Image (cartoon, rainbow, N blue to C red; front, side):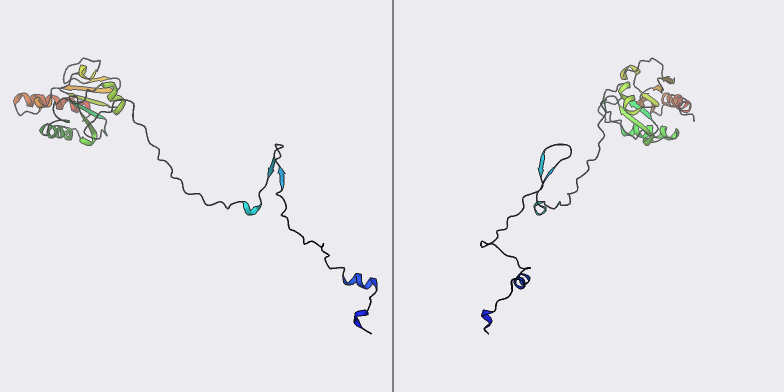
Length: 209
């Protein structure tokens, strides 16, 4: 019997081909599924979700420099002074043509401060000749507890007081003392020694020495 002429029963043929995929005469064309559509819970607007492959991977953000907070300058007058004002002692002099005061008078003043257990770090020396000092602006900037007027009248700094030299005066939380100018104090004459003695007596009382 020829194998080409063997005919199998219909049931056997069905069992042999039941797991085979029967394709159409035309090849199947793959069409990607359209993007899914979702609806936001709080609105009726339809949002299309892009395929995962189209979403770029987020890169690590570059570090951002944090700005440093700066303190704005005071709106008041900024006076220049010599010293650090750590003990809130303001010394006002009047020397034309000098930034603060001549070197010989600075040395003399430093000795006086040393006798009072003070130094340049404890005081602020201001020259009224190079910058017109106004007491309210000075108090706003430095908040002095003591003000020594060395050859400077109260009216020159708009201080509403009138009191004699070598007599301590307290006003609005600040203690004031007026003396002759340094070029009169810094003398080795009899008059200069007398003035230095009066100054020393006032300073001992002022600074509780």
